Length: 324
Image (cartoon, rainbow, N blue to C red; front, side, top):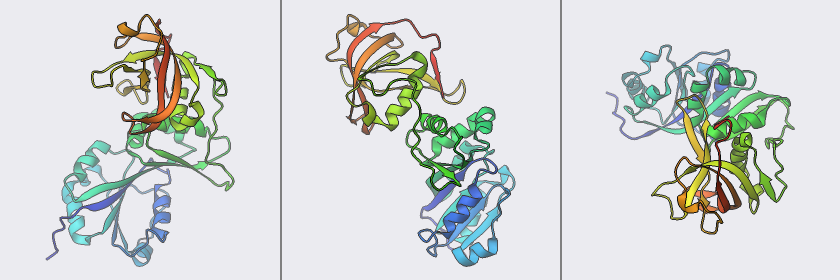
């Protein structure tokens, strides 16, 4: 009789659309010395692409058993728990179908000993815009879970900065890597910013808020000590430190149902303004503030913190939403 397994089993989750490079990446991972350590590995593949698994070679060389799931309804707790009892794996690799429901997958996994250890999303540069334009909600749900997003088949003409900004807008902790046939391609993507980042005082146009927000997140050193003037929406909460608020904008990262407020903490202690005491939620203001890179408890990390110099009531911008 098979032993019942009660301890947690680490699961590596691979997401992405068809021909996004998931199978290739998994095959390469299983060949690496740090992963090919003799542990029993169960690979669950939920779609079959152009690239295939050599099941015999994986079992012989990487102690990996491959099983396939063709229909989404077959991906359920009874099936997964039976696989655990049958193969008794030390870890599981799950190549999930990009068209299947991610929320359902997470609910199913909660009924098993498997615990998500790492989430990797693979995207094809040749189809990235196609999926983002036509299946944006599915792509965004993947990005929200990801710790690493790999975009492969990148060329010199690929809009890497735009893609990275779109992903980082959804998930600030996600690392974005670009894979190219050109070994000299630099991972550092320098975007031509629509404002003068070298100026001591940056005047931000309304339509450039999203670009500045992501760039300041990725490169806080670039803005340390700078002064910025911009139009923003007020967000205040009784849970925030006294004398602070968040000036920001509402951004649509996916669809009308996925609008979020993005902004950085701002201190008002030394601001000169007749409207400081009357600042209210949802109020539009023009704010001039110094940006400092410092640790903040709200971020749980170092990042941009604003120190207001002047705040004045303002009319809403022509387009109130920020788009990525």
